[in-house]
Length: 101
Image (cartoon, rainbow, N blue to C red; front, side, top):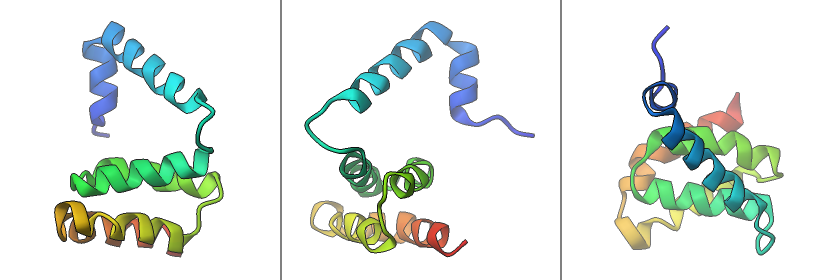
């Protein structure tokens, strides 16, 4: 089985990967936004960059936090005003598919 990028990151730079994980945990722990909103924002930001891997990873987290298919689709659609069709073309199909499984 092929390793994913984060597995390689942890093997090759464990201290940096640990610091990165700590940063992520600090952001998750902030209280200004609920977890569902944070996941929807993250999905939108990553979709605007065309980052399929991140969107694929965060849709299940958004679902677990209570996000609906319509909310995830809307988050990705909002990227139209920032980056054109990039997020829709690269990320919307996989995000929708995760709700149909």
